[in-house]
Length: 317
Image 1: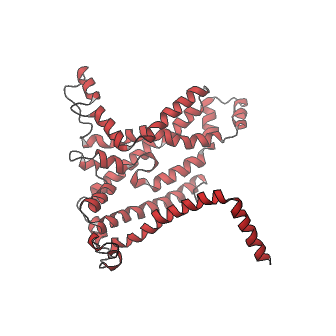
Image 2: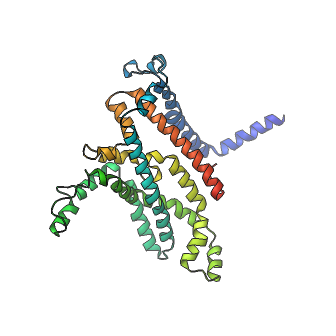
Image 3: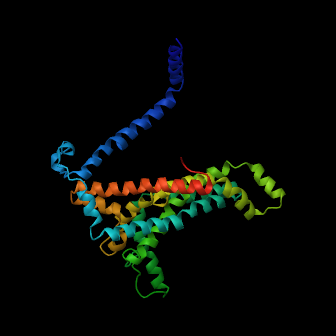
């Protein structure tokens, strides 16, 4: 009797929340179809799979164990790929990650409502520009032969010939960081602005009564108030470290801006796996490469969450 009453109560609650339940279930179905079911294909990393065998080949292909994992680790480009991937991600984490935090704090300190909205809108608009278009803009501005910047520098007598911004491997990492900051900082600043807006205004008033200046209020009230958001975003960024994280996609930048001239600095694990799979048809090998990267990313999430939780007392789980 009691069980029947509980079931009826659950049905009633479900019907009352039907619109919300629909949103939740649509998201769940999306994850199942596009995230969980495709994970079954991971098995081809351990098999000698050929696209000619179709879906059936996922189950019928010969088992080769760790063959493709060993092949990638012993590949002559392995060290270069790891170096490029780690270098780009580290530079973005160090130089690009703090920018949204600083931008959010600066915007929150502006008291002119109209100016604040204009700055915030302008800052997050680049997020809606595709990386393809960003590459086109960079090419127009930085091309060695016809780039606007080089033309201005030559006309001003600063340089005699164009600087190869787009082809010099020594400039690729720095350019990718600058592009990531410009494109993504405004969008991610929204998260920290939301965290700042949830801070109790009485804390600022109390700090002012104690004689705290603006910088002191930021240091002792604002930053501690957004610590949870910063920790969460930092851990997620470290988890997606090999792909660029929240501060910019390494894959799009490397794939679009990489060329034969800067390949030694632009080729990363993701673009290498993509080319191996889509261009050369080595799907088992490409899957093994991506699986190694995924395992490293999961490990980074677990380790970084544990470390940050010990240091700050906060984590994502």
